[in-house]
Image 1 (spheres, one colour):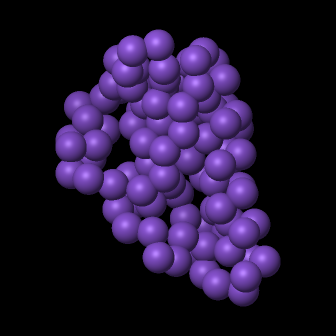
Image 2 (tube, rainbow, N blue to C red):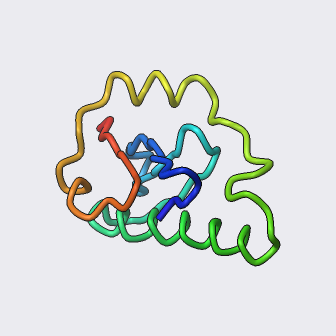
Length: 98
């Protein structure tokens, strides 16, 4: 998935109200789903769309995207590995902070 120098995207997953949120760290990209089991597919889709759009424009994937705010990095460090996401992650390392 992330093609740029075999880059791995780290994300923290948490619940907010009725929604499950995936917040990427190195790239301030967020996606949400009502069902936690739908989140891996949606997160991969969002990253793939971002990469495809960059390729179409002829720019480096993730160009212009800053990092997520510090609070999400701290959440990630305190979170546990999300084993449901590990299979077929395609360059995404997600941890569950729920």
